[in-house]
Amino acid sequence: MKTHARVVVIGGGIIGCSVLYHLTKLGWSDVVLMERDELTSGSTWHAAAGFGILSDSTSMARLNHYTIECYKKLEPETGQSCGIHTTGGIYLAEKQNRVDQLRIMEAKARYLGFDFEHVPIDELNELHPFIGTSKLKAAFIQPDEGHLDPSGITQAFAKGARMGGAEVYRFCRVLRRTPGPTGPGTW
Image (cartoon, rainbow, N blue to C red; front, side):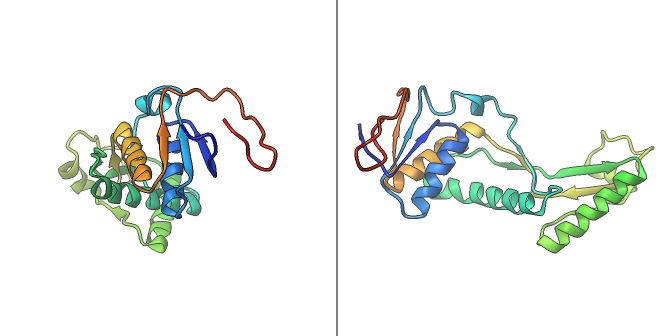
């Protein structure tokens, strides 16, 4: 096991493995991830794993879009299944304030170049026959939303990071950092 690294990422969930992967994409190979148990053994293994693009925040919408595009490229790059299922998301409004909110989201989606389409209420049952439409004032669909396998994505990030030169240590608890005389120290 290495005793020194440029970066040590602690935690082998989807976030830690994503950070490690992205560091290698930036050209950093002297990076290590340490996980106390198996990868995804924390909160990642039971995540709901639904994904969407649109958000009230433009920055978050861009980040969500980047993330989904990254996931789609990750599987062919690593050969690791990510279990991505793009099913689309349906947004419904029964009250006028919700209609107004969805119209704002529609404008934001158009500005950002994302799909967010108005669906006439009478056509909604063709898309999803179990939605009661009697009280609805508006409906929209976002075709790029869906769900994925969080464990598969995590494993793909870890594999991609390893392919970029990173090292992943499992079953290795981090108890403390020992400061080095001239640098970051050892773990």
